[in-house]
Image (cartoon, rainbow, N blue to C red; front, top):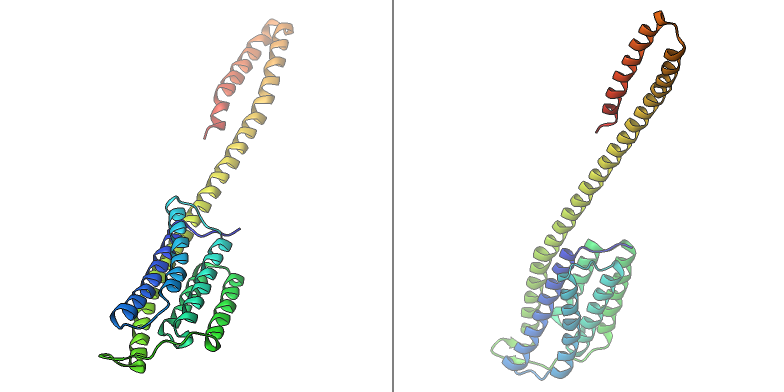
Length: 258
């Protein structure tokens, strides 16, 4: 099962925090600065649930736990569902923050397998399609910032700037973290291969030393028996042969060294 590194998971926590803070700031400005009647209790619930999930993901990443691809896909799917519910209550697809639908896809395309990204893409399309036809319209605005259309254009600009900054900063850092992790894994594989080669070489050397030692031991026994039975004029030659064998036995352990 594929996993996501804790550093990448922590970056995703920061990305989600920025996205939620952007939505919360927009709600506060619209309700308390522009005095627009919004469903504040429902908005607080919709933004609070992903925030709680994000806190749990932060705690997991700080402990060094690597979330699986399925866990990360579930988190991103909840982000899409939460954004769909938020847009349903706040103007639907006409809400400038509809562009935040692209953020989960950018993350999925960076860290998740293709089948997970395809599933999230289908969920994003379904969510956006839903808020095209079913949504609670935003109240009309007339004030110092112009009318509702002027406010919509300003919101589109702000959402584009926020999305661009989030993608440029966090997703770029996420890609860097992934490349660093892949390089680290490559070094570990190379080190494991080198250790395996050294172990094979050591086994070969030990086997060679054993093959050399066995004939020498046999010859030592035979020479000893021959010396006991040989005439006196041949014992000097057998003694010389025995000394050569003893010298070879002393030198043979060096073959099995590292």
